[in-house]
Length: 80
Picture (cartoon, rainbow, N blue to C red):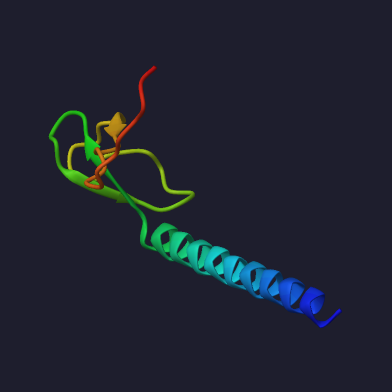
């Protein structure tokens, strides 16, 4: 029965590693939110950094339409 316990121990370690990765990812997201998310003003095209709870308004021109810029990370989708 010793071979049974080795498998469950490995699964437990994998689960622990997965949980640790999730905790790290959540911490990174929380840090980004604390810094604020960057948006582009729809009128003057300046970059505006907003944190949760901030008013949605350009600090330069007062325009209230902000756009989230595209990600720089490459993305690929499978079309069917």
